[in-house]
Length: 263
Image 1 (tube, rainbow, N blue to C red):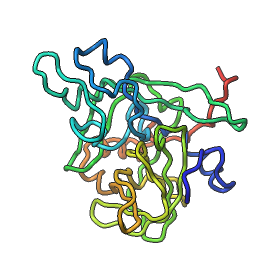
Image 2: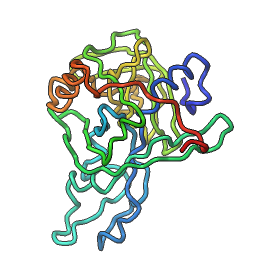
Image 3: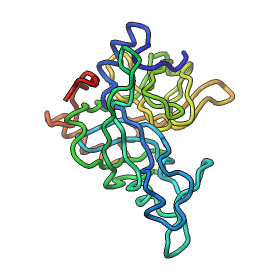
Image 4: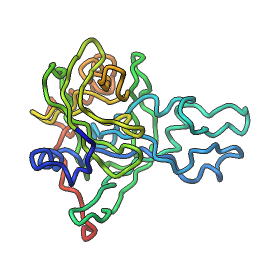
């Protein structure tokens, strides 16, 4: 399936998107790197990836979004050492934008941005995922995704919601073809640069079963990290899961997107 703006999906998927897209955000570099660094690189203001809220202030995305190398953009250099800044500092030079999408009339909705204050986990268990903490409690406004304790089965319908190529929020659907060890593979889900970190949601229950990390291979499949495998390696996700099981605030439905007339 082609990636489509969430507002333009076929009716069944549009209903699904409305229930789950609020927790999806776009990872962006801050636009003030030239004021902070003598050698700021070339990434200032660049849309960098996608991700999903998993708690009131925790955002799950791809680990390579905070790597010190990779891609065509140059990261800032530390003024003292001349080296590329570390992953934790890369993270705090970014923010996450929510509600970056169109309304039914095709107009942009108001975007709400939250700065990253901490890189909580980076590549736990050497998996290509990261968890960052956001200022404030955006999950209270936008909802959070529910983690799936069991992985997707081959043949199950899944979808990704994210910001391919830096565009407004899009959805693309496909089917799981394999879930083995830590890897989740899916067919039919067209992804692009900027999709990295998008949550992979199981359509039958809306739960988060994976984190997208790799685009289409020569075999035609895209791939990501299984959330069920990640939980075993991430102390943070274990805490999130326990809070949800205890009836805490770790998982809650996503509200409807806000129009320009919303407060």
